[in-house]
Image 1 (cartoon, rainbow, N blue to C red):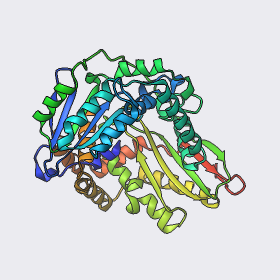
Image 2: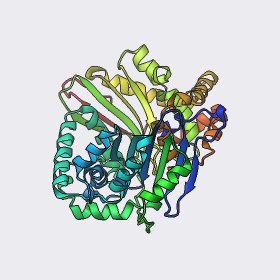
Image 3: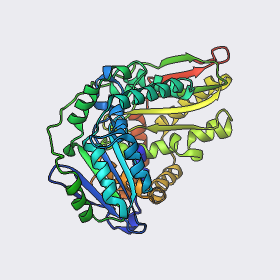
Image 4: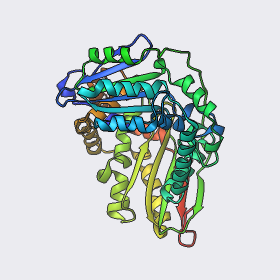
Length: 433
């Protein structure tokens, strides 16, 4: 995601943020040695997100991940939770569109116990039928409640309209209808297929060395062997030829609005110029053009923001805001006017320098905890950015010119052929489309 560029270490320190080694079973290990506190945080990323699940089994990747800490071949869910809580640690698992992750935090003295538990849930989940049924019921309840939230409704409608039945168009947690179709056999096969070391990255940060982690993992991950990973294909998204409007009627006082279109994949070399452009347009909080215009000058919304979701495959570019039903039409027109303006006229020299200064100067504040460090290390490895990425990032950003910003704005912003989704009260809202 574009936010990765904001979460970088202090380059002036020059020391490598971490060390990297590939273990014999194919697992990539990254360690940031930070002995200031006697704690260790570990994150395992597995390329087992919803991108890899069949559409008729929507929610399979997320359900697989969420069931990992709920029982193994030798431990029940209460035994796992009581063991980790007894030492004041934490162990959890989740999934996103591209990845599944297992996270562990323990005191240094309990690292061996923590890694034993992590290895157990990672390698030997039980997928007991009673836990599956309980988790499915819990997820269905959560999904049902989320449908009462206009913000969730507008986001899901935008994603499904933009990506259709492709993985990025479906909710990661699945739907109330798809979850009961997932069987224990599906879960076991998905786990066996994708939860393999050569499809995984393990990052650790805290009071631990690379050598200590290697020895501990060689002990606890015995038997976790590399396998061939099935390939998969996702068809390309065809952008609409004109502006496509989706109206969803709800009796709400605030209209929820998302406008946008297809964005970029993370490996796109224009990622950095787009980061600068987006910060100026709507990603820079109170200083962005959209915020100044729609909030400060017009008073139509408390918050408005734009962002690119740069993932393994091209994600979305979107602008989102809430405003009174009566001002929804005017606010949308202003969003599109601002997008056209930056696309036609670019940015000023002052805006450019302020944006680059923020991007290069703000990252130390976002890189202070072990959790932030392991997330950064794992993301750098996942996107193939290289361990020298922290050293290169400031120069990459400083090299962005006004011409670069104008070029990427014209290439990647499409105000006349995006997708507009509005959840609003039909009795009060008047749209210009």
